[in-house]
Amino acid sequence: MPATIERRGSRRAVSPREAGFVTGLSEKTIHQAIDRKEIATLPSRREGEQERLLDFPELVYLSLRDSVGRFLSPAGKRVLRQKLDLLRATPVPGGVTVGPLELNIEGKVEAVLERLARIEQARSFVTSNPQVRAGEPVVKGTRIPVSVLAELVAQGATQEELLEDYPSLTAESLAAALLHAQLYPRRGRPRRGPWKNGEVVREPS
Image (cartoon, rainbow, N blue to C red; front, side, top):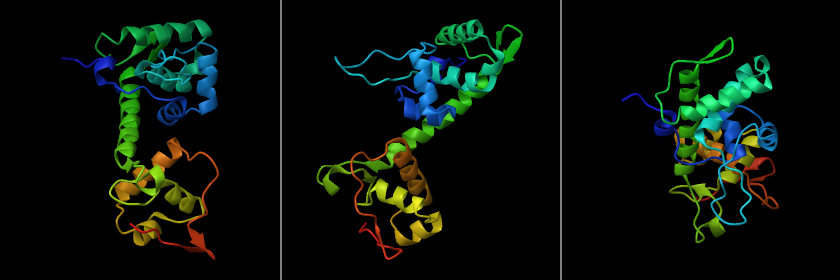
């Protein structure tokens, strides 16, 4: 059976920050699109919740808008958004026509799915347990905080150096941890950096 956006898309709605990673747009641009009601957010799951969550068709739309938006009028963008809504229950075609433009829908769907899979992989490699470093997100199976790895990269550490200093990491888990740190940055005052006199201080794994 031909796949639809609904069947092929992520079941988990994403935040504007995650949507920025998926679509290549800035988080500010995505918030502006929401404020203009160019795209719709999902209803809050709890009363009083203010989080803005985007569904799969919105991500496909934003990806297309980034590449062809300058060729579409406001009315054309509305038509494109409406056609993507219809695709929830119909097979994903090779393209969609909006005025004189033939847009490659299938290619964008694949690209969005690949980015969503990377987000899920990043989440699967990271865990948070109140009994481990007071609940700070760490690489699963270790006590290595993802924020420490991100800080070291910001200080110029290379992948090779990090894998040598943290032998419990793999290239895959390191990449996932760094993406996790990018998508879910640490809040509050930063902890003391994991280095001393310019040298990396190894965290226990």
